[in-house]
Image: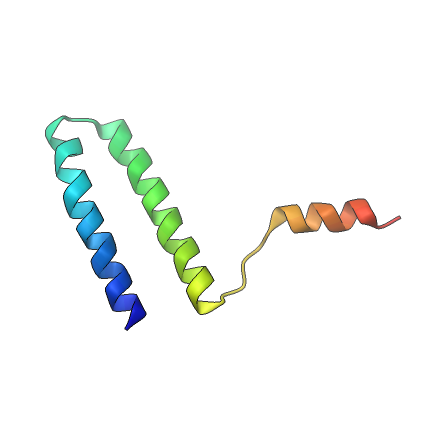
Length: 67
């Protein structure tokens, strides 16, 4: 149920934002918007479904603490 509501919300956001960007021919802005939207969708799904997520900062912290 969450997944359907989540993707409905994403579709609503895309339907609101993308037509103006395409109408104004802001292709670079649309590319940046797409990248950030895909990253946000992925991170939200990782958070909700408790998927494993690689954290490079955690690895760096573990290396700093070990002698």
